[in-house]
Length: 130
Image (cartoon, rainbow, N blue to C red; front, side, top):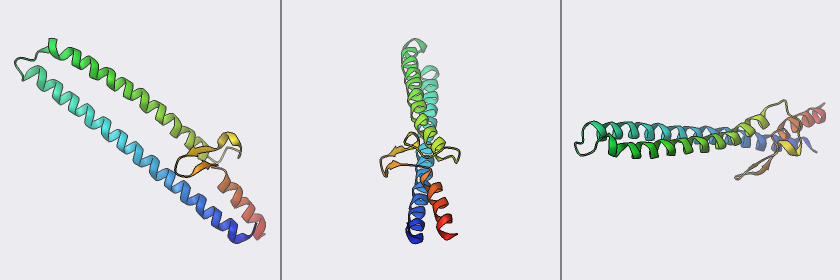
């Protein structure tokens, strides 16, 4: 390959790496903010329902509390499954892995993404320059 082509592909890979990192941070913050707001609303609403509303007592609030708690548990499991995918992306982006089909990641915005391609292109560029 020519030097200009290699440099262009390396820039494209850097752009993809940066956008993946930005997307990952945004999604994490959004999910964390939703969990924080939902937990705060649950605690405030439940406390108000039990202590301040006369016709609602613990006997009527307990089933709701149990249902909401189970919902949070299921959402936590969902979060773990989503973070597993992100951990695979981070593992793929590390420099210790060799480029192979196992390390390729499907990213909807970019298609099949090989995290080691940037390193391989950089090495190839160094050979061309030398």
